[in-house]
Amino acid sequence: MREIVQVELPDGQVAWAAIETNGVSDVGFGARLLPLTGLSETLTAVATNVRNGVRAARPDNVSVELGLDLEVGAQGLVAAIAGSAVKAALKVTLTWTAPATVPDAAAD
Image (spheres, rainbow, N blue to C red):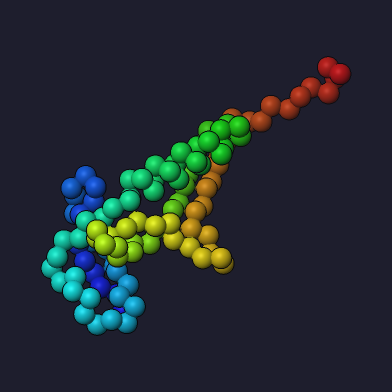
């Protein structure tokens, strides 16, 4: 069962999130505002690693789609990269707008 709750983002803004209650009918969230921890750290780590991983390819544009699960922890909600062995949680798209340079065969 899913419950819709308000979460407080690291910058103080409030957003809505669907929380899986795993069949428990009353998890006690109610009108409570849950702090969301780990979001900034998770996004920064993913962005840094994607940037480092594609640097040598020198794309003109990089697009990243990231799935996050929100898990209830002792301090509130915790952002974690979502996924399983059969489903990717991270999709990276690289694009180049300039034509590729082809070495001149006559120069050899």
